Every structure is written in C-alpha cells, then in structure tokens.
Length: 260
Image (spheres, one colour):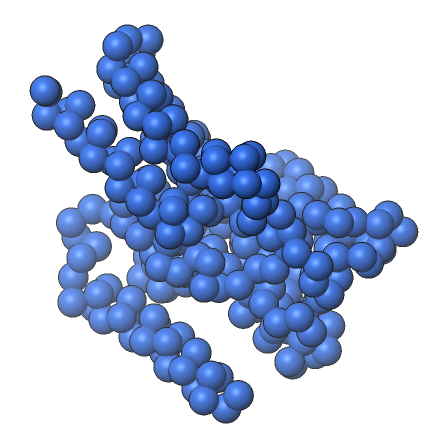
C-alpha cells in the first residue's frame, strides 16, 4: 500500500470515529473526499475511499433510517416559533447560523488579528464595491435574525451586546466585521470557503454555543485553513498572546459556571 493511500484511509477512519462522538464532524468527510479526488482523480483509489466511508457510515444509516432516530433534527427552543422582522415565520433560520457562527469564528481569530496587524483586516485586496456587496448581503441577514438570547448561547458577542445595551446593535456591528474578515479569509481560496460552509451547516440544531466550535476552530486555524502562518509567526510573543487570550476565555467560562 502506498504511503499516501495509507494516510487517506487513516484520515477516513479517525474522522468516522470523531463523527460518532459528535455527528457535526461528519460533514468534513465531503471536504476530505474532495481533497482525495484532487489527488487521485477518477481511479480505484478514490472508489476505495468512497466505499470505506460508506462502510463506516452504515451504523449511522441504520440508526437514522431503520431505527428512525433523527438526532440531527432541530429541537424546540425559544425563538423557533417566532416570526422575523419581515413577518415571515422561521423554523430553521440560516441568518442565525451565519451571523452567530461568523461572530464565533471571529472570536477565535482575535489573537491572530492582534499578532498580525494586517492579517484579515481591510487592505487593497478588498475593493470598495466588494465591501458594499457584503453590506447588502448582511442587511437581510440582520433583518431576519431572531435568535433568542434568553435561551443562552448565540455566541459571546450576542450575550455581551444584550448585557451592555439590552439589544443586538453591538452584535450586528461585530457580525458585519466578522463577515468582512471571513470574506478576506476566503478570498481567492476555495478550500477556506469550503471549510466555512461546512462549519455553517455542521450545526443543524437551533441552539448555537461556543462549545460546538472550540477547540474545532482553533485546530482548523493551524491545520486546514490556509492563512499563511510561516515559521516566523511562531515566536515567544505570538505564542504568549495566544495562550493568554484563550486562558482568559477559559477563566471567564469557569467563573461563569461558578457564579451559576
């Protein structure tokens, strides 16, 4: 067996194991199959990868379609039966996903933005007309956003916005910036865009919590995302900023649990 094939099979096996622990990870099999296809094209190797994926997914198919236990369905949570600002009733609100998850992704990129001042920030690679298009994309999302912060979750910036101002205004501003950052992250890089789409759709339930994305996003930053982190990035100052930021977040999380 060629070494490249061996690692592909290991990837499929360990991704299957992680997907049985958390089904949200299963969508990443699409991303990796696309990567395998780029290497193997139409061949016996890509067919073997597909067959191995299907074999490992059989218990999940049995659970879903034979036992009829659809654990991925959205649960009834506050906000699921609310109409949006346009008067349209929404069961599954994609606006909630895009804005809240984008703000959560931004949160995990904060230390990297601090370290690399020009990293993911406006520069001449983002034209003014692109920013205007993103703002036009953002407006209907803002109008149809209806996540209920009383349910908790929704991301740290949504909770902070309601804690400080009792409304979504700060959250909307941060979400707009988050979308600009994600656009910059995905600009001219299809793989990054693919991963972002998977993150959006990997959470089918109505609730949105930080715990769904850590340490996932952190691992993605250092592995699958192509953000050009060269060797010079890994110095004492950069590593210290990253550790301090996440330790502060961990401390706040512990404090929040203790207060409760």
